[in-house]
Image (cartoon, rainbow, N blue to C red):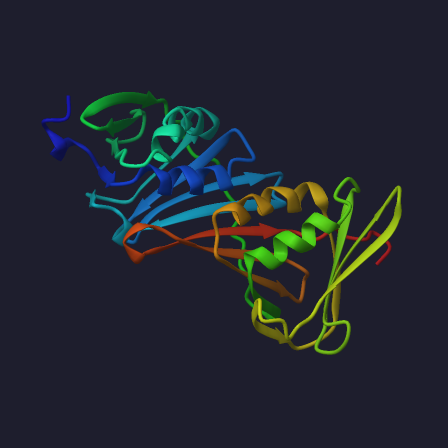
Length: 270
């Protein structure tokens, strides 16, 4: 089936299935995802209601094989893909087991073929593709505040908050309290302040005080990446757009990135 590889616009191989499983699970908050193949690598993007967008980036250096004739763009059912790949999760975590993945894509209207090789045994999956949806171009141009921190710190903070409420308030300031998260639930109002000079905060750059509210239902998907990332960069702009960039170390000393853009809750009275 794959003897004539020159007929494919995209041929890619990852030596370790763990890499793509971790990245895809971190952005799997909606059924469909749009895939972009370019000379710099592969990008998978998920968007919901034009308010939240998550993307996983796998640079060309991470692939053992990456052949691209021309840029490609297509939509797939992400739930199905993740479900297929997770069938091998126990094997991925088994000592001494080797699980590799290959992707093949021809052109518009053709399926994506996924080959999973485990200790010489090959599993072949074919996923239907659809025309991609038009996605918003989120971009933080005028950065107001930026914090780079270890993911373990953000995990600890979020575990203390009442995330059963509808919204969460983020305050960033060049002066005290510096970095504060607030939720208001049945049990009352909960404030958690992070010391800006903590050893777990690599960088704290705030130019002015800004308090912005976000939907918890938008924040929760962005927290999925905490399980596999080492560091996270948090940025906001003058409009309140929130940008998370997670750094994920993978095999070979390479780094992959997961990004989330989250729009603020707009107060109609303002």
